[in-house]
Length: 110
Image 1: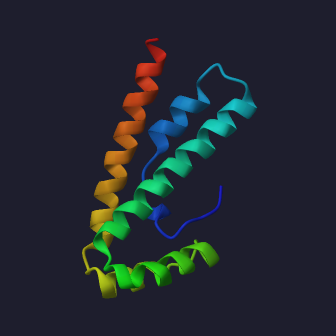
Image 2: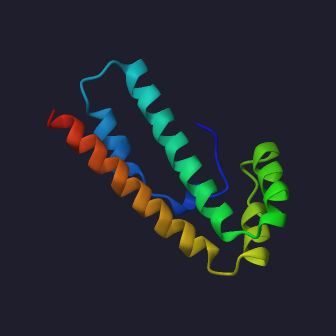
């Protein structure tokens, strides 16, 4: 799993623990973690695009594609969206994590 510019804003340890303690095969656990990372990535990028003026979308997406780990992406967003963007990303990530946890727990009941 690659390091992303927003990783320090996300707490997904509960999800990781839930998957780690499942009875699935290790390769299935790895796939599940990758899917979760993909869901969170798509959710965060969509959230940012909703708040970023459309004429900045191409530059943002290009930067994320070429250097997804670059902390300067947050600086770019702070300049174009506002200084609160890190808090907003953190709140959105928390929503995504809660949604994923609900889905994982509902799978246990099936």
